[in-house]
View 1 (cartoon, rainbow, N blue to C red):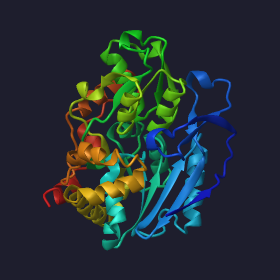
View 2 (spheres, rainbow, N blue to C red; view 1 turned 135 degrees about the vertical axis):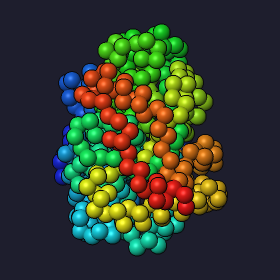
View 3 (cartoon, rainbow, N blue to C red; view 1 turned 120 degrees about the horizontal axis):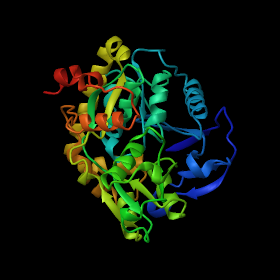
View 4 (cartoon, helix red, strand yellow; view 1 turned 90 degrees about the horizontal axis):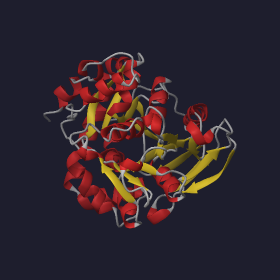
Length: 384
């Protein structure tokens, strides 16, 4: 496969920071620091602000990362224009934003690689972001029609008045563990420490704050830094730019073998968790119900194929996620049973999340499950 790098429309001045190349992590995950005087407190880290285009016989994927939202959305729009694809240009064309390069999206990669979307007459383009918050803004701006993202990240959008609803469960698992520097051995030492997240308002932001509350620590007593996706956060941890970070597989295995300290497995706090879901604006779901149904039929084929064909699924995982080949089978095993064929969304933790978001003032009104869920597609396709 070949990659073409497309320069962003908005230039961002940057200096080299952390290179996430440890143990097979994708070398292209090169983080950069914005040259900003206030960076050390609450400013933003980022990847190279560029869009990558990959062509293969099975389809197309665009990867987007950026230091500021304008750069991200401008780059995505530029890439779509270069591909001759504009939102709304064709009802059979669906642009799907994925909030990270993640094992949890394996059935999505499988569906694309095996041509299941094309079998339904759909031209599906996957756009990769480094945080759910940026994915949500792309959805609001019309640059993507469907987002694959953490359920938590849609709560803030809905509370802000965006007509977004989750309509299908992708993965029901709590994958995160909190790792720290070797000398940071207990959360009793957390005060004054630097914690890495992807972006404010993202899942890692919420879970970091939830972890602190779990140990009776006010988030104001620590420093929370926006760094980027898991590889970038682990690179920052490796460079001692932060003291702790949430990470997921396979970085959890890498962190363990390299001597970092596991402070908390988030399964202890949230044993049942609606990790990744498909979400879209209500207006789109109503207008394009037939196309969404076709998309989900193809995706169900991808889930079933993933469940029944481990060897091929592992190869696809290696291709799309770029993890060390030695870790791919274990990643498949860890996530396999979290992929619901019937679209089930693990709802038990959602009211708790809503209450905590409301009590901390991050959302101004309480939401119900009905505010956040469109169950019509699960009802129509879930039994098939």
